[in-house]
Image (cartoon, rainbow, N blue to C red; front, side, top):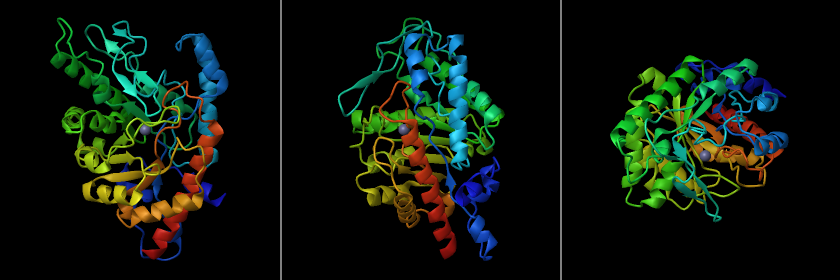
Amino acid sequence: MATGARFGRPLPRDNETDAAHTKPQETPGRARMSWTLATEPIGSIPRPAELIAALARTDCEDPALGPLYEAAIRDTLERFEAGGSPVVSDGEQRKYHNFATYPVHGQANTAADGFRIAFADGHSRRMPRLTRGPFSYRRYADSYLEVAMRYAHVPVKQAVISPSALSLMYPPEGIADYPREQFIQDLLREHETEIRRCLQKGAHCVQIDFTEARLAVKLDPSGALLASLVDLNNLALARFSPQERRRIGVHTCPGGDLRSPHSAEVDYADLLPRLFELNAGHFYVALACERDRGRALQVMRKCLKANQRIFIGVTSPIDPRTETAEEVRDLVLQASEHIPAEQLGTTDDCGFAPFSDDTTRSRDLAFAKIGARLRGTQLAAELIAGRA
Ligand SMILES: [Zn+2]
């Protein structure tokens, strides 16, 4: 289809020279038709049922799972590309067990009873707890990227977990002979290593999942906890050059597990001013699920800095209904009244299965919503280009 052909064109990795990020030209005809808005997924896609079943039977590192992982990754990339996605992910098919704890899953110096993330429907998930030093990653996300890039024909993005999320692993009571300051240094080193490895392998961009940002405001309405998490993440971002930071983004959302958020009630006015203090180039911010999108967009406009691009969520993974392309188009047009088009992009509000065992949403639903995002974004782009 025509939309797919336009979206399917590989884009340059340096966003500064990216045609998709260029302001519409005055020259009529060809320039207008080729202009498009940047659009990217967040990351996760529900795993195939046979992979979920196999993971329930055996360890995630069992070599016997290799063909199942590989098939899931290939199928995910094929479906992304068949729909015309200009930027794809591996769907996090191998991120066990979830978006947050994959780097430390299986580490001997962890216990299961760490920080609890409470969701609105009453269920909860737990972070691992660090039992002794030193802290280190067991795996880096570039191992996923490497496989995805083997099969992909368009740029691949890679999501990594924020250092602030993993900082919750350090117990409040401390660890003998391993002070928190040393833990933070080890954590920052591992996070920096992970991002550098992804950038060096050619990630289109690296997205830092910062889903605990909004949760932090819920847990501490004074904002002090959020401020400390932002400061920690900025310490990590300071290790990168301005050029590298243009390929580094941050994702925020109200959470999305088993169709339930964890912090949807937090007002963006209490979150985004701090969030946009992060020294990153891209921000992937949930919008479709917001009760008052107009207000959310006003807050975004106030907070967004000149050198930052915001990818607004135009589909809601926790909503079982698939958005229409026209609904997406209208939301993008509404956003373009607040945010300059050259600083605007679209995404999904969140991943479709941040936790690997989440079966509340199907792969078909995820790709139907992604299709609506792609078509609606292109419809809006054509209208925006036409009025420029
Ligand atoms: Zn999310």
